[in-house]
Length: 297
Image (cartoon, rainbow, N blue to C red):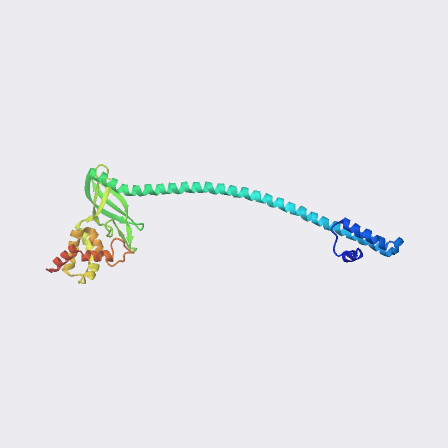
């Protein structure tokens, strides 16, 4: 028997809500189909079978609903448990983030303090060295005895029968010229004045803007070609020699560096470049020495 057949026998359109509704339908139809009331045995048995089938269907529906409710409660309990666990996890994570932020803040603060102290040290160190040098200043001629690919160059000088050797750092220009503070290449064998403390020569200052005549001649061999090209003069012209030595005398090695690197853009050499050379060339002191060398009134 199918549920539709059972409902038809009980004269019900839909599945009843409960057993009472089935009982009401059974009592109403039992009087009609009972053999003692004019019904047939077969119809009465079908009525009983239909009641039994519908009651089983109701029990099955109730069990299904109960399981659904139980599962719903279990799902709600599980969801609540998950929500609690998630809240605890988020709380722990927030606490961990707070601790990490504190550590990061402290770390950044320490780094900033170290950077500031390092910057202060870099600013103070040259002044301190200069102060120490000036206390008992002695000057000697130092010689560049070597240069390295790591921007370093080594100088050496003698004082009271003892040789002092120090390593310094320069900077590379155009990927090939290792220059000192004054901006010209530090050539092996070049000689520059070094000032130092007589009692403690570890405190020293290299004055590469002061050079000996031999080093000046070596610089001229580098500078004469770009200088002659910039002034539109032959490199053998005596005026080129005059202008070079006049610039060296009046502007020092820094002025010579403007001549030597006068064709470089600023991005390759921020201190000595085409712009700085043009500024030097247009300056009144340079124009005076230029006119003097060329014999122009």
